[in-house]
Image 1 (cartoon, rainbow, N blue to C red):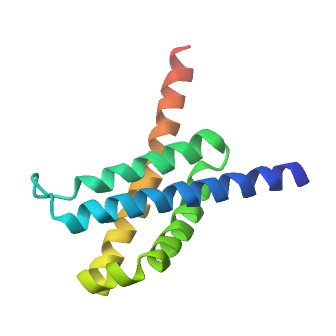
Image 2 (cartoon, one colour; image 1 turned 90 degrees about the horizontal axis):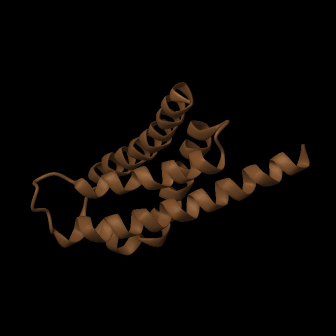
Length: 122
């Protein structure tokens, strides 16, 4: 039981840190205005933390991804509070952050789908 709790803590911490780093990188891309496609393709980067957490914690992939993503969002907002809130409204930041959490969850579910498809063919 204690070993499982230790594993959950390590996965949570690693996932939150990786998510925070992706958030900061995507945030800089978002602020630079380098938006040739007209959308926000940088949000697709958030698939990576979800996939990483799903690899490390396959039994509770979506739950761990959600908790790590929400914690990582709060940590990134604290770290970026001066640049983040000077360039965008709270509503836009909240929508962007919720989209990031959604894409992280999609990354975890995508990896789960790939696993299911792999095990069905073998």
